[in-house]
Length: 234
Image (cartoon, rainbow, N blue to C red):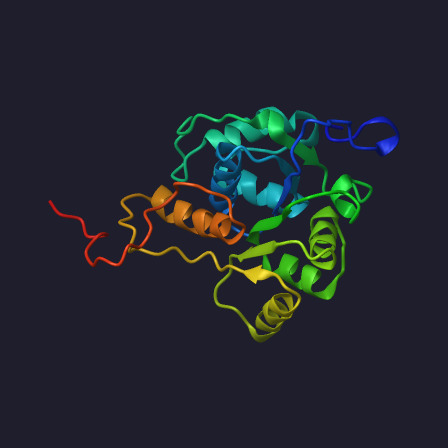
């Protein structure tokens, strides 16, 4: 399995940067995950990727693509090249050599331990089941365990929740995550940036997630204090 060396230890790579962990849960919104991953790689960052079992079903449903442990690199390349509207090969994908993939059932993986260095974690999109599991510290899979480790080590954790409407239990779980130091970032695109395409709306949410952890990007037009910047004129 990629990402695991002899006796389950991560392969030695002394030149690799300290990575960001990206967790993809089973919520709808897989284009958000693709945009965040592209943004991190375009910024020269390294990534440890955990795609939950539920998210693989969502990915298959939303894109017709699969993420398979044995073929994850080729599958990921196709996923990241796909536009939010379904257009194949809409993006040129680079930097896949800086991605390390971990199976969601591998609780001996690097990100399951606080002694494994990471810069923080982004969960995008985050389902209500994932939110509950992290808030309650269940650690039922590697994604939840990595999030718990991120919190206990005081590292940045961004939870891009994608659900509507939100009920009382989920709202209480989100408050609990906020109290624990996580950033709760709803997948709520804005329109002031002059969106003309579904990809623009996706990129806004992805860009705000990257803003939260200080990763530079050019995914959306920033507010500069002048009205009318998002208006479309014919």
